[in-house]
Image (cartoon, rainbow, N blue to C red; front, side, top):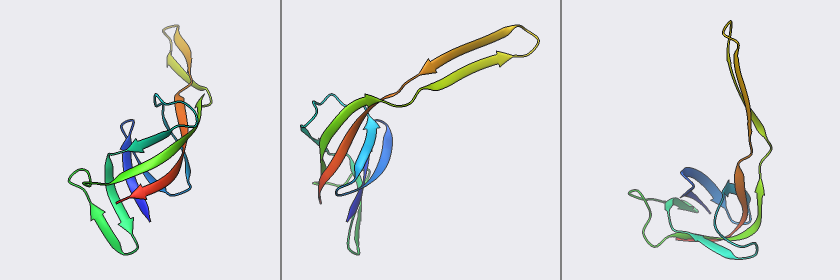
Length: 103
């Protein structure tokens, strides 16, 4: 059984027991969060597709940690014009473990 959920402006395919890093959520470590924006649920051979979301479907997950990804460098450069800018960025994330998929 798997589901496709939408969170943080992105879509993720999730399976029970999977650990996933998603956009930062306002939740304490150890608490449970519920994702209501379920776009697709597949249970055995039965597939349910939402318009855009599946009614009465939800995914429950446990928050494992809050953190930052590795640093990426953003470098702008224009040749012959003596222009260059270097900037770093670390995106915040929330690591969650999928506990249950309810269709």
